Length: 531
Image (tube, rainbow, N blue to C red; front, side, top):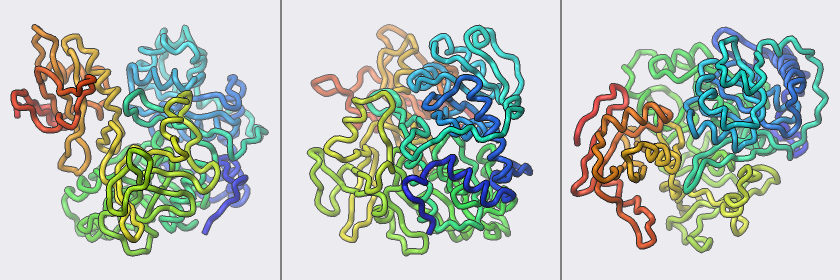
């Protein structure tokens, strides 16, 4: 089993070690392009030195607002080699959520794909600390950006010297600020240390029984932890190869896996029924992958594709909290046993007392290994103290433990919605909808979809005396928010149910109101129908 001392759990040090050990071994594959460990190490040295020339230093923040590409990885690893902190940005973001995350993380540099420059131009007036904009490819730059920041080209950085930048990065140095969804407030930036990211990847290697001669395929975005920290980093730690696809395609997924000759493949929960709905082929089972990470066990999927689904419970803040050993018998509907090498796990009531076996409470976690989970929520001491109260990290998720110690996820206690693999802050979605001049107030809630994940319903109270149609509100949503935020259901009510202290009782909004007008919008066609 691969193991590292605490001092060795440094991302860039592990790349340097891999490049010295097997410089000609393949590491990163994008389509037909393959970068060896040695080539990637030297290339990211060049990017690191160029970034340093642009004023990026240790502990400074650099956002990466780009799709899956070699440029994303060049920026990520180049920045970390000089001790900077990278801030991955969801490529769906625009408007206030984009401005908020860049501003809140104190970002001074941003690496950005040309297709997103107009979104940045729309908000850059509210980003006085942003001084450098680095394009992944040549493209025209809006005046709003050019007059406020120095503009560079990432390909030009490859002309910098390939010498080691000479910055000593330690296990307890911050590696990333990764934003997670807000619950009762804006999104929080999870400050992840080098040891945290490395431990997360090492636990993944252990529970997947991943071997150095194997390879990984991921179509998931690199701005998410699975694609980056559980794809690129485990491959690097093992001296293995990872193939990165630009995006997920249900029709070509298994052909892409075959071309990658991957042993482990990435996916999310909702992709499982989507893949099962594809037309059956004679060669469905003739694919190389032995493991699919991550989802709930599905016998039909496993039989058809001869690929075992890996079930775990975890989060960006923690890493893998519980899992089944790869070859062990799985307990139905459970997330396996707690990861005792890394964490203590408890299920607590509202007074932080353990609940009896089999009863539901909030899943709470604390580390057994130092520096193995979130250090803090960046610039949010209030949220940090609240989440870590009584020396436990409170996940905001409800679960239970059975008599044999298996953990079961029950539901989300926190006010967030998970849709198609994306976490949505209901607070931020409601903020966006409330910007419409005809909306008096609204509430966003999760309803169950036929894919087994959350679907989004927004319950709206229009301003008195104002006419507001569902079609008009959907057009507004399309223009102002990421696509995966756009609700599938809009319900109009005269008022929202509230407690005596005016808190909205969201649990009463999941079902249709007696006098409510409910409309549904088809995700694919955009067709609107009354329900």
